[in-house]
Length: 163
Image 1 (cartoon, one colour):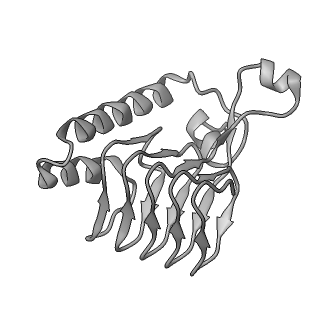
Image 2 (cartoon, one colour):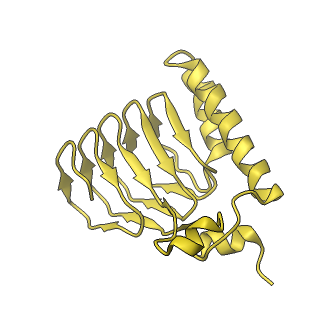
């Protein structure tokens, strides 16, 4: 029998109120809160918090506060990743971001979604679909990337886009 976490990361319907998932979500909120409270002050402390938060990290990356995510451990970033202020990554599904990727301000990455069928939606169950962003991608400010999207390498997405 699969755990709710295993269901979640595999794109199946899952119960977000599962105690283990709630604990992981609260941990991510705490770490994001601490990171955001630092602001642009102590970069080393901010980096240490992000290293605790993310699933797989690299040597060189930068995220400008504020930053928000659901879990953190489901996010992988490549070398030279840069996210400008206001980035939100809802990472119930895996998020893989390649090398040399740049996000403008307020880029939103949404792997989380709800069932289209009204009976399934009323059940309170949720699901997520992974997002993959290739190498050398620039995503303009205010862009929303929806569940299940793959963005190929060397792509430029204009500000305010919905992908």
